[in-house]
Image (cartoon, rainbow, N blue to C red):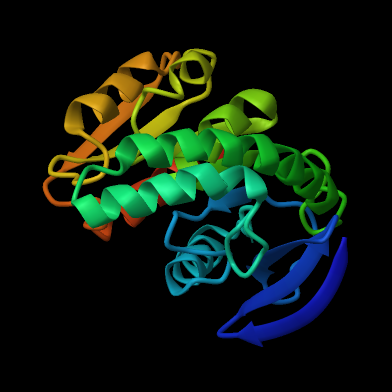
Length: 246
């Protein structure tokens, strides 16, 4: 892990880093010492590690609960080169967009490729972060990620048993049902009732496929990008139950 920049504002320190040339960011309380829970953020298809919504969520988790929070750019996002494996899907998405046809299936199939590339990067990042003395090798870990963040997050939660709880959603079941069935940790699942990208029945089917004994569906009216801000409050309480009170 190589740190490249550090800034502190209103009690939160943001450090930019790279692990295996993958760019990331980690936030923690200014002057943080000693171990603390770690929450991983998986950005959506319109985001990157330091998009305003990501920074805002990270700062909320740091100031509200004292977590360390980390995010990395998925392959092809945040200025990273577009993997050649995406090219057939990107061409299909352009054609579907021009024809005014639904994009969810193409996004989901591209998400499978993104996950295969991103999961080893996340695993290396988690290993590096937990070596930091202000996070710690025994730190309880949570994962938040919707849309693209769930396409990557569902199989990541399965691949990395250290993740104790996950907030997922805004993604359908077609490519994720087998991985979802293997999830056993508590899950909070976000679904937008009028999602123009992920059909409602597909999102509900993914929630149903999740194998966790403890899982909660949070369904709200509106489109893909209309998740209410109060869901951030809910996710903070969810992580507190499973990362702090556990």
